[in-house]
Amino acid sequence: MIQIKQKWIWLLILTLIVGSSVTALAEDSTIVVQTKKPIEQTLAYFQSIQNADGGFPFEEGKESSLTMTTWVLMALGAAEENVKDSKWTVNGNTPIDYINTCSETIEETTEYARIGLALNAIGEKPIYKRC
Image 1 (cartoon, rainbow, N blue to C red):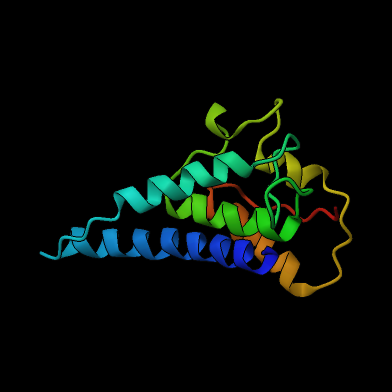
Image 2: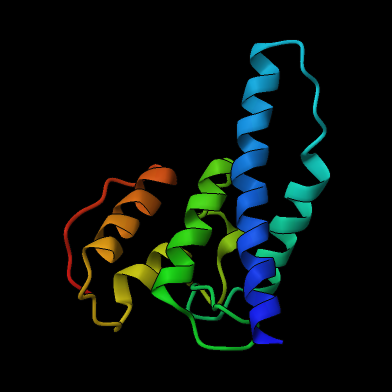
């Protein structure tokens, strides 16, 4: 059951990224692709699983994960969502707040890279800070 939910989360993230790319392609050519509904469903799902600390879990109801939060931020950036908006604020915490206050130990270069990519995707200037 956990593997199925994780696969759905990854599928939703890819839907957002690919949907955003297809929309950009459609704007540049005569191709018309309807991606609005899957993106809206993906955003609604992300909202439903966002935790009180502002982060996102691998599985609904579990604790927030730095890895998943950064992936979701990249998807939200692709969807041109304002993560500082009240829509993405839970108990006064945004996903950015979660990243800034996380207590996870970062030991891999890929985690630092993903944090930078996620912050860049939402228009934030990444500042080196060890969680």
